[in-house]
Length: 389
Image (cartoon, rainbow, N blue to C red):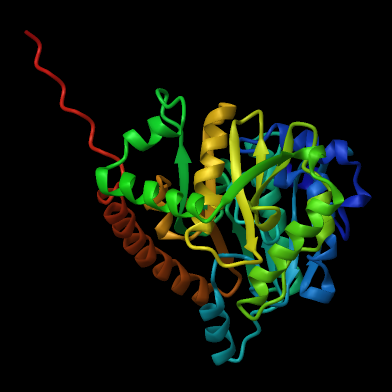
């Protein structure tokens, strides 16, 4: 008997239907767990990722003899907003051929382009079985396809074994060097022009009378969240958009071994800006997530989103700072390109072939772009080794 037939595949409309301990137990076995895949955080997203906003939750579970062995956060999407991987051109091509692209099936953490495990499983066989069941389910529902965003290496292995096409895009992450004890050590390793630029930017902020204060976890009060959320929503409003996330997502917290850290900019006795960072202490990683300002001040964005958090990361012994999606300007601040990927499978065979050709060409272009970025490293080249006597 095909082992696939030994599994029970289930879809649930809300993660509250499953004990959090079961979901989080799978997450602890993942190759790249993050706090954003915890049951508590995903449940908090329900107010934003729901049918009223074009996200219909359909969390996928795989059970063997009643025991949960694999699971993933899945949504039926009526659009492509809030994903940070862009497939609108594919949707237009479908429409031009009289085909329906939406709804599509999406495995992702809504509004959160943080790389990490998406297909939770007790092992490779269970992960592969989950993908097979998902493909069957997508076909049975008559959906256009299945997309998995910002997954892990284990996810990619299972998906690409099942015919998924891979797309890659760089993000910009900071990695601590062993000899960096503080911000001055980090600056010393930068090229002279980059180092001077950062010093000038920090000086402008200081000369404007701005000071940065840091609040962690339970020290963030309701009034602090009020101020942060006003900053956060203003950032979207300036672009003519509505903020994706409700305030409750942030106040929910991130779990026992992770926490929100709020960087507040004060000018005299007035708060003028805020930046929110998530910290996962077991992995030593900080994630830059959101920022906003109620007053425009020169270079304040760089100070609050990069320099102050990096200074704090060095003080706290953290090893990584992930700067989020896009933003080539982050390289000048010491964040280097890191490849992130997504996998895509379309039911329509001819369109899947076309997507495979497109992603192959795109991969080559992205690879060349990443090589170009690597050649523009803000860090000084390593000193040549002295020959042995």
